[in-house]
Length: 324
Image 1 (spheres, rainbow, N blue to C red):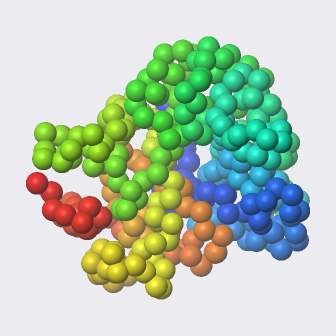
Image 2: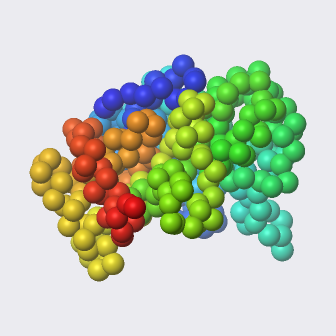
């Protein structure tokens, strides 16, 4: 497994990361974890480690916190030492299990919520620190001074080493960064062959495509310029292109993916991930499978270097039209 630098940090992390949203059983926080949930989590982490993956992505809302709780079972299983892996989590989304009755889910970047969230994350994971903490979704009521204060306190206390964001555009990152003492190291965005808006806007400058269709405001270029690692969530488009039964809407794209899979002797999943890895932005795909065999198939992407023409053919197939 190749390694990549996480933003401007001193962390050299695996090019592919394991997303842990699928761990922890049911989404209902009231349904307790089972032994089978624990076994599944241990097997998933073990499979990731065997592939050379050393980076694990969480969020405090995943399975109502149970994803982080069940992940902590790896310590009793003695799969790996804490210092040998990198753990990231996210906070800022408040769901019903985190709120009082009758309230509405919302986003919260207040100093109090960030500090409270991190304490909860560390407790569930049974660790003393996070390698990185991301703000999950933009909070339009954010007071950047409060975020800066929280980040400073967390850094000073040793609870968080580095910070980043998720689902933020370039302008939002730039605004927040102006209040911080250290650089944001990551921005986690949805990115795949079926969700390529980050790439689309740069290729449709001064074209006949309606520019209002693209609102990420140069986020891809902003992150590259400021050495912020782009992490791709849902890099396999939710499995919609790799299931046995797929939509006829994507039939031609799937044929092309399969053609390259056959050519390189890898899985369709590997080709989709290789498409992201081929981009010079050093994108870090966050893959969320719990199945060891499928994770191994995905990591075959490390064997593939698509040509420029192959990359664009795949991109065009995702657009459903040719570039102008």
